[in-house]
Amino acid sequence: MDIPQIEELSLLHANICQALGDPKRIQILYALHGEPRYVSALAEDLGMPQPTVSRHLQVLRQRSLVQTERDGQTVVYSLADTSIIDVLNVMRQILRDALDRQANALT
Image (cartoon, rainbow, N blue to C red):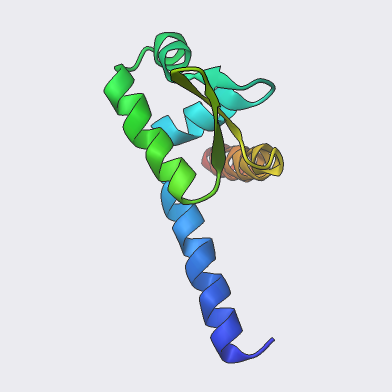
């Protein structure tokens, strides 16, 4: 891989990480795991205002983390690639391990 390709890939990687930088977006991704959802259902289940959910879904869609499908007048959202959940789970495990190490260092 040459340097321009590495730089482009790094930029794309950073864009995805930026999208994952908001806890609400992470909650939305987990909520979409398993089944497509309407914005209204996501808002209700997550206890967020619908405009907030819509705004976060737009960011996730721009980063190709979620996809849409029309269902009459409404839009259904789903994960574009379910492996994002595996990535999030690995990140959570890294955090748990770091917290365990910190707790052990204090004892």
